[in-house]
Every structure is written in C-alpha cells, then in structure tokens.
Length: 174
Image (tube, rainbow, N blue to C red):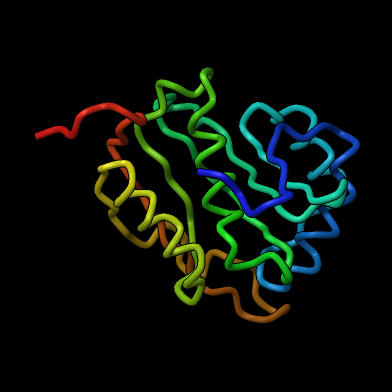
C-alpha cells in the first residue's frame, strides 16, 4: 500500500531519533520515552522500524521488534503519525512496508498492546487481519495495577494478536 502523495517510507537512522521523539511527544496519546530510546530504536532496531517523511520532515514512525521467544512474531511497539497527517493511511502504509521487507518474510503473527480507548490502533490491527487473512484475538496483557500510581492512572494494555498472516499473492488458507 502506498502512503499519501509526497510521503516517503524507509528505515530510520540515528539522526531521526530526535524528530521521532518530538513526533511522539506531540502525539499526545502515546507514552513518551527518552530521546535516547528513540535514537537507539532508529539505529539498532532500524530493520524493524519505519519512518515516514514529507519534504524531509518526520510525519510518521513505527517501531517494532521480533519476539525473542517467537521469532515468527513481530511486536509493534508504537505507531505515531503527526496530527495533520492522520487519516491518510500512513500508519497502514508503514505497517505494510515493514511486513513486505524481505528479511521479515517469515513473520506470521503481529502483536501489539493497545489501550482500550485507542480506536485508531484497534482499527489498524483489525484491518491488518482483514487484508492478510489472519484472525485478530484480543486479551488483557498488562492490567492497570502493574503501572506506577501517582502520576495519573494508566489504562490497561490489551494484547492484539493477528495471524497467521498471508504474504501478498499467497492463496487463502482453508
């Protein structure tokens, strides 16, 4: 799937870390991690992350990694799209671009944790299941009581598991 006109998708590098941190900060909905964390993701985990840019400006970022105990499973950690670019298919395009990478050709499952009120992310993963022929199961992964108290309540995080995925052009199972 193509992103909106004028948007380029690719692997980030360490120099993208600061702009990714700013994007996540401005999202207002994602948990903000340190700038160092985003620099490290863009550098050390670049093969499982995607940056979306328009005219050299970062407008989207998706971070993911293989699950160590299940190498056929990709865990998507954060998907951020700038406010002015939301609703244009950039999140979907970043996820497609990542799953279409040759080195991730053996990925059969995609997992993510999503807060119960995050409708955009819910739709993203439900549409992935519909496009790639997989099922989408939802269960509680991290209950609210696991998160530190005192800085505002954190919603529970629900686990979304999509799969088994079909590769583009692969016939439906059944």
